[in-house]
Image (cartoon, rainbow, N blue to C red; front, side, top):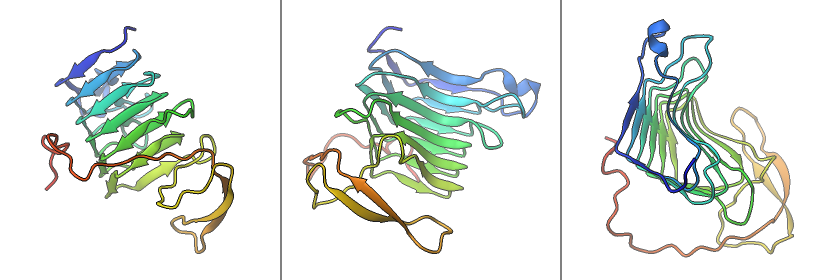
Length: 219
């Protein structure tokens, strides 16, 4: 596929019926080109007939190091524990201002190479989903919201490590222990880790000109 595609202001939808009539569209958007920009799209009712596989609203597969995904709405996708609102995999991305509601799984994000350039997902909202966020491999995930989901965030910490935000970073190579609190377990888990890299980023005190909730403001 070509690179640098711009996909914006589209609506992708299927039939909500749990029957043969509801199988008219499997995935709303499937994109495999490098470095796309995906803005202000809506994908909904990509349902499934029970036993016929999952449905997905917006899917960006192996999209390179500079994908931008912003201000999209995905809702009512999937059925009975399968199907995703939005899936993004690549070696780097910036994903922000998106809303996922009432999907089997809201968001799936994976930085596929674990390199120095990390994919970043921030300021997204997931609510009313079976699972709000599925986070695989490495990546920088911050300032996201998850509420009223069956599971808020499901993260795989074994493949690409995990990111810990702190104002007191340790030197690279430092071995340390931390506690991981897991719902329904009476005691925290003791986890040993090693600092692989330190990311330093200055954040502006004032951000002008862009309101990520302008289109899909929650009340």
